[in-house]
Length: 124
Image 1 (cartoon, rainbow, N blue to C red):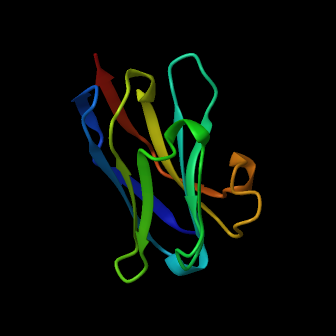
Image 2: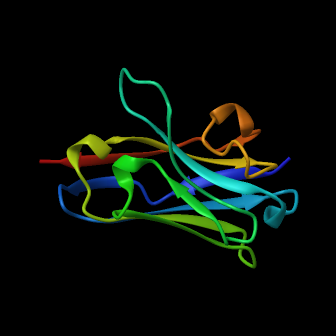
């Protein structure tokens, strides 16, 4: 199983940017679809973005389209989430996750490896 470690979270003002990174170790990184999820206080974990094994396909939740970009570097075993034009409602713990298939990327149940999460706080 792949192990995941997120970094890059922090405190930023609304309208600002952050870049989250997720470093993978263990089994072959390029064999996994990678996803980002987030969980705000008192809310359920929600899908944010996903990228296929080769990086040729990406998907986003509507609320972040045009503001967030997911990318991956299979040579460096990393996946990134560039977050621009951040809003207060983006405040959450962000999790990196790995799934064996791209189909069903929206559903957390499809992912079998998770990082510990990184806090993103957007102030007004």
